[in-house]
Image (cartoon, rainbow, N blue to C red):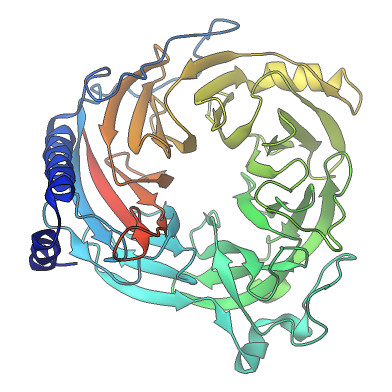
Amino acid sequence: MSDRHLNDMGANRGPSANKALARLATAALLAILAFVIGFPVGMASASAPSKKDGQEFNAGGARAALPPVTGLQPAGQRYSPRGGQRLQPGAVVDDEVISPKSLNFTPDGTKVYVNALEGLSTLVYTFPGLKRLKVIPHTFTKAHSGLFKDGEHTLFDYRYYNRKENHNVFSGKPVEGAFSRDGRFFFVPYYRRDFDRNASDPSALAVIDTAKDEIVRVLPTGPLPKMVAVSPDGRLLAVSHWGDNTVGILDISSGDPAAFAYVKHLVVEQRLPTAGIGGNRDRNCGLCLRGTVFTPDGRHLLVGRMSGGGIAVFSMPDGEYEGGFSDFSPAPRHIVIGRDGMLYASDSRHGTIGRVPVSEALSSVLQGHGTVVPGPKGETIAVGSLPRTIALSPDEGSLYAVLHGAGELARVDLASFTVSLRVPVSPRPVGLDVSPDGAFLGLTSQGGPSKTEPTGYAGGNSFEIYRILR
């Protein structure tokens, strides 16, 4: 949306609307200042962390000696006129940025991939120039049958309840993404196939060849896959199914998409039946499996139980369910593990980030013999409203979190485990990644429908890049 268009819209508003616009302009000015100089904690938000629980943290593992992070500087923004807001100087309108769910830097740092959930596409940009290279659509007709090996449309014992034929004619909603270890392939799961209104049927996973930025294969998944994770040795891909308490394990060791194949179907406690399932599937999802990560040695897979609480543990590569630990995080959304073996989790329900040594957690789980045990509670810090994606800096001195409810980005200093920086960003931030060299971070802000905004959308519909100042 142009500045002229914004001015024209403002000319027809009443006094109360003009006051609201003035407040918005003031907030935008403060936001720009914050980006340039960085807000100390407390200046931008009153929700500063106030508690630490559990054991003290002994930071193991060597870290590079880098200067402290002092702020964030705008380095690029792309936003849709459908509710998106120009937040950075030089921001560019991009009609394809529709409900961006996630953002990933390539392992070599030369490109950025953005999954536009409601846009049904993956957007590819150069980095740092942010020139759009490709819009990869996730809509398939009969002409795309060659992408589905031997016409495969299901896996294991999954059935379709909403369509009897033409299962591979659909549009997929891309959620998260993960690169193969060499960066050659980008794996993108679909929230659901568009004909599957309640996500009761198998969904799918796209394999994008990053050399061509084209989909080279589509594989079926269980219902409602959200997270994907590649094992440290690059041989396995885990696909967590939010929809039925299961995880699919793919063998991707060949490097040939035609040879990628499922080898395990893991179950956390018991599968959730999906035949005839109704209600809001973002809530009616059993244990609502989401955060997924392999331990650094590749011997265990950890999966967050966002509804059931705690973390489920599988031994790998055999896939045996070891049980879980519940007291660490009541509602873990996203989980990451540092090279020093420290597990971090964002808890959207309670507005916190927790951490605990993986070794302590695994030791307690193994003593439970396949059951869920309390386990270590670890350390917890309050960060703000609705933390979503978290990301470690490459030197592991910082952890960043987007706060969906607060419309902010927070930095946690890991030496002191305190929030050291907090800046406003576009409304409804959800996705986040740090560049491989640690010099930049990128985030997405997901749009939503609105009955009052002229565009029909409320905020979001933007992705932003920031330079990390030291």
